[in-house]
Length: 85
Image (cartoon, rainbow, N blue to C red; front, side):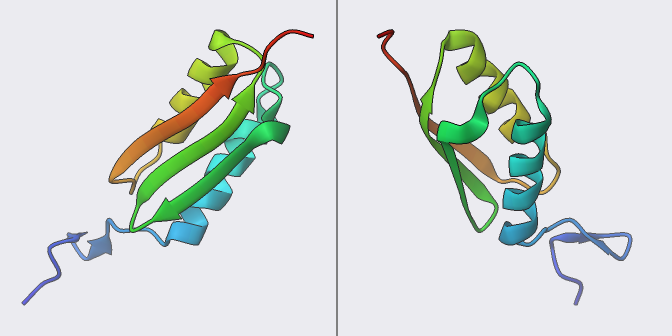
């Protein structure tokens, strides 16, 4: 019996560490985003991003980067916006 996560012999499930690494790469490559305050965890394909960002645009960019990967089963965001000093 074939694994329900496989289609045409290619596994659709990705290792959590691989998903996490790709999200970090995307966040760090975005020149309009300071990813230093963003923490990513992945469990069974479900992504959780936490931390703080500079503004609502940065929050949206981080969430979009985290959502646009194959193999994720969901996304929760606990990002908050830093108060201006």
